[in-house]
Length: 186
Image (tube, rainbow, N blue to C red; front, side, top):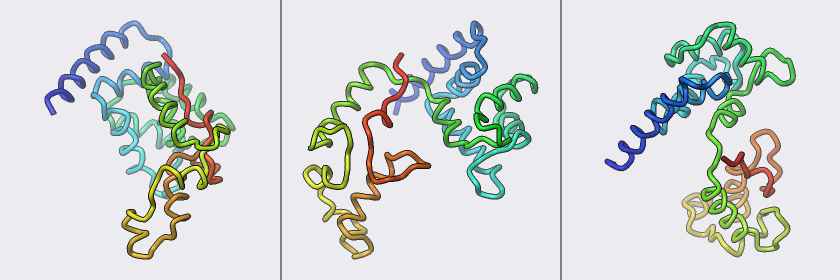
């Protein structure tokens, strides 16, 4: 636990230092979250979920501004509104907070991305750049899953549930493609 606290402290100090030199609104918001440590972005997500009264997993501008304020993030109203517009790509007047929080995450380091890609390649038994239920049969034993053991899920349903946790939130097709899981590289 001490290692995590030290890591969080170092992250907060570095984020505070970078914030003083930052002008990009997305990066400013990211750094303000990271000043709270490794769970800062997750905490913002919890704040937004509490505010999502109709449970549609999206926020309008008023909810977005209130969420930033409730979480204690300092940002001028005009800057926050411009940030909202940046994330409201379709002009619908709402933003998906899942997509917003994903975009807010810091980029993966090259070393971490390589570890992720090694795991992906290991699971992609056919080597076609797509992980499917068939690929999982060779690397994941569903018979030990509690919901398989109690009869709630079939083996294929266990595999599909596993894949869905990595699949795109709005395009679940039972296939995890290599390009869906890659993130920006520092």
